[in-house]
Structure formats: structure tokens, C-alpha cells
Amino acid sequence: MKNLVLGAVASLFAFLIAVPSASANAVGPALAPLDWSGPYWGITGGAAWGQSIHTDNNGATSGDFDLHGGLLGVQGGYNWVVDAWVIGVEADASLSTLKGTKYGICSLGCTTDLRWLGTLRGRAGYSIGKFLPYVTAGLATGEVKAETLNISNSETRVGWTAGAGIAYAFTTGFSIKAEYLYTDLGHVNVPTPVPLRAKADDLQAIRVGLNFAF
Image 1 (cartoon, rainbow, N blue to C red):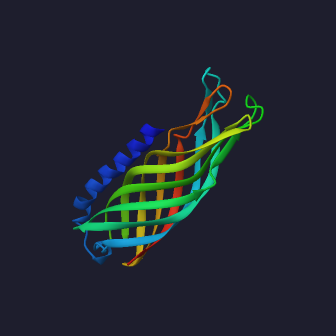
Image 2: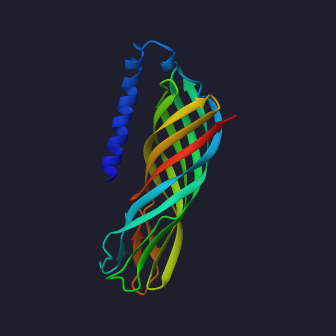
Image 3: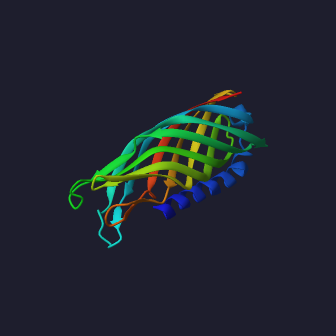
């Protein structure tokens, strides 16, 4: 999955490289670059999903199980514009309900729970009229809680995130966006009688957002 995501991001970046030569031949105000420069803030939210697995020191495993939930938070950033290119940095922080539990071999349930998620990412896009397709990547951090045998542990993990999206500006000061992010937060150790680790390296989200420039 990680290779697929990175390949998709690379493909979109290649598309952005090719866009200037294609749009240079277009005529009319519809493709005139909009001013995306300056600071902005907004709200963001969407659906999240992923997979986890609990494995102890003896190699026993819960098997993969699904995580589902949502994200809701705030974001802010700053853009610099060079011709129609838009280069920026964005930070966000979201509460999360992403959670999953596996029974069967886990008689009392093996649970992985993402409590909150924050990212600090670079963004690069190319303005096509009021549209801004972009790629994004950077640091991610979040609190992951893992529980089994009624023993739990929460850790604030630091990892990475990458994705792509598209923004649309109604005016210079007001825009919406939709984006996909893949996040890897590694694993959480749980101090059960036979210590185990819960993986949180396959987290995905589709988010929408509203931004206001100032």
C-alpha cells in the first residue's frame, strides 16, 4: 500500500510538471492564475480507515483487522506564489474516532484506537484558474491507544504522511479543498504478561476543508 500511495503521489507530481506547457497554449480568463499567496486558516474533517495487527514476543498474532472512524479539526498555512506555481506549508490538528477491535484469537478483544492526529506538511501545486491540484507530504503525530487482555497503553507517535488533493477558490479569500492522506505512525507497545506491539502504519483519510485567507 505504501508503494502504491507514493507512486500515485509521484504520478500527480509528474502531471503538475506537465501542466504549465499544456495550459500555456490555452486562451481565456478561465485559466488565469488566481492569487493564492499569503496566510490562511480553516476547518477540516472527513472519513478515516486503516488496518492494525497485534503481535506478541512469541509471534502469536491477532491477524489483520480493520479500523474505521472520522477526523474533525482545524488547519492553517501559508502559500508563496511563483508565476502559477503555489508552494506552501500547512499544519493541522484533528480529533479522531478511528478505531477497530478484533475478537476470536483475542478472547477479550484486541483494540487499536487513534485518539487525535496532527500533521505538518509541505505542499506544491499549480494554479489552473480557480483550481489548485497539489501534492503534499511531511510529518505526522498522533496518540495511538492499544488494548488487549484489559491492559492498555497510549503513546504519542511521530511518523510521516503523504497525499494529494485539489482546492477550489470561490474568491481570493475563500476556498474549499478535498484531499487524500496516507499516514504511518509505526507501532505501540503494550505491557501485557507477554509484551506485544500494535501496528498503526496503515492509516488513510479522505478530508474536505474550508479555508479563509487573511
